[in-house]
Image (tube, rainbow, N blue to C red; front, top):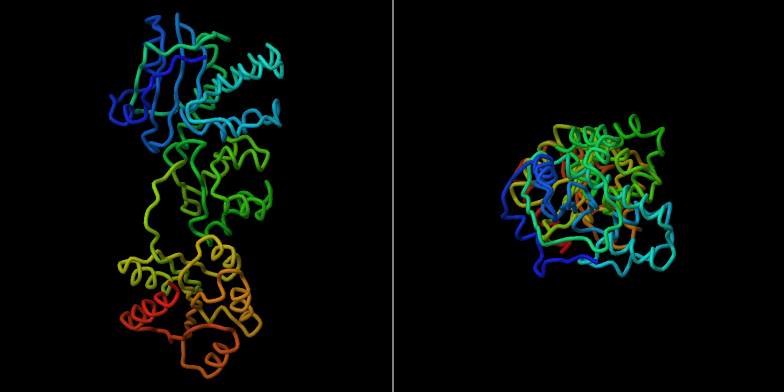
Length: 376
């Protein structure tokens, strides 16, 4: 099918020459050269794109990796029951489509339509990259040649989409990025305003907690991946959502502390005092959605403001204790005064410890270190 190089190209790309993908591609096409041009995303080196061409015509374009995730999204309408589990890193979308043609699961007209669709979607990503490491391989060709199109016949219909993705690339570099809720308060506040009429918050919240890339999310939510990226872009830009790379090297997990406090100043000082000690600090203003955040981040300690609690809301602590895996998670209650009622509620709610506000920095740090050590 494809005459591939024996060595993976990602290490070569990572140290390769830099250039502008659209300029390089047009150059090779004008020169009537044959081969494959590969581009590594400078914002996420686990993501890359490649395009095959010869005789001034483009034959196919695709992602270098993530074939199963991308094809599940692109083929869901035409081949919804296609088994993509055998797809490996060295299997291309081109191979897969040709296999479907040979098995008579695809007609020639469907095949040409899908080749054009997959190619144009990849070109949107490739041509939106302003500058990247590039690799041209003249010895790599497609066999058999299924489709041929001129550069402009493919690019002109998607020009507006290329411009749109170019605009959001600083925050959302590709559909392979994995969005996650970074600031729960901002997400709840802005998400209701921006997205409430689109899906409702709960389906989106559930989807974002699955560590899916945008292709997978779009498939799950039955949306266009680029439309989804554009809708989430304001949340990413504001810091409500974060974006993780498609593939990451596992790093040692830092102890995590979730602080739920109505005071912005308290949240600021908790973060400022604990982060230098090596803790990952996640702050929330309200208990709403806090249990979901705790499920996602599995904190070593929960710091809770008693000012946002009344006797009924102390059920939050009990609800946390009933969640599998969190029966022994330390809970530190903060109160603005030494009140007997708070000490009573500590015992009734199942909280671990109590501290008064304002707190001395060293006192809070020592207490957190002690409580986190009991959770290990």
